[in-house]
Length: 485
Image 1 (cartoon, rainbow, N blue to C red):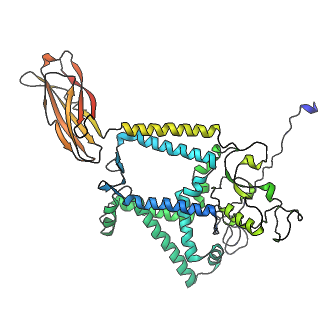
Image 2: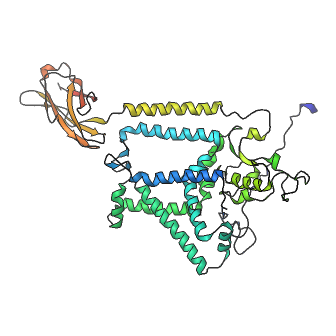
Image 3: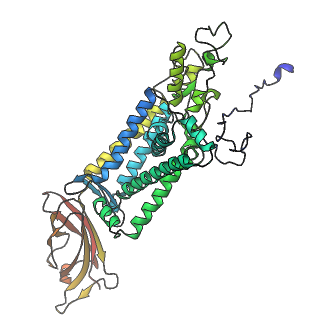
């Protein structure tokens, strides 16, 4: 019976979590004991140089430049990118989207979601580390911090000092730069929703709308608070992506990882000393990987949801390995399968990736087809429900309609209206008209028919909207003609 017992593997439940320490970093300024009531352990991110940080700066610069310049670009005489909520139309260069184009927005959101799933499955949280606006803005704010307050150690000492003139002007300059940059960010962001060339003069002359001013104030406060104060709290406790991203990870996902088999046992040593003779691994326990981490974790404790895959610890560790004349890669982008040192190789192409890619291709194709088949006009028919028909003095039956015509194009277009499905009818109203770009026109029309030409009480027919500016482009909308008894 002893052999029938199920062997249970004992898995330790204690997880080591690296917490920043030192004055002003998780401790009260007036005490050497940890401040348990401080909801945020202050993290002073140490500057580091390397390939990954250079790549982050370049990507962040391109993203920031695009964000700042897009609202100022003009295309065909109007703002190239404008999401006008009050007018209910979104302009993206040569295309204007209306509420009727909701499927296009749905496809764009689905493409963004599955692209994120695909990248996360292959390379972990690189979106968070390289392109997330929260990360980009945080490091811009840290750049201001370094310019006015110095390096990480200098910032620690500055926070420990009592207030004097030097500390006052440095803190004032830092927070002023934060507020000004937050204000500039907010104005640019609001410029995506209201014409930015009119917004700036309206703000200067106090003619801006209440909603525009309120939005600028709210986004200024949010940017200042998020990038200046909350920082990693947004990534650790508020952003939902950090919580569900592990569902997309597998043993073949490339993440920032520490090679424990090579690095352990940790310990300091001289450059000329042989670590094998000392019984040590390649990790000299310098803690630089912790000091440069924007979320304050120790990557040597294994994969943690707080890691944003930014590669800062890789650059810091590679610099130390170069100084010690050790090979690089103690911390690197690698997979769990590689770290297990098993005979199986990492599967770069696997079912999950192929599935995400196929869905992405299908949705992208559906979006392209939707845009290609999209017509630059729309037609709605509105009937008077109180009076479906009217009989005139000659005994003829009259039905009244209101045709709502929308010109979705960014240029004026000439339209005409025709009828299909009726015979011997008379139309009262304007059947040819020009409609300016991005505008709507209500066209009242009355259709009059002799009741002897109608075989049924209700006859179905179609109004046809013909685009005279684009030969062959037309749109049919069915409706009914009521004869009565």
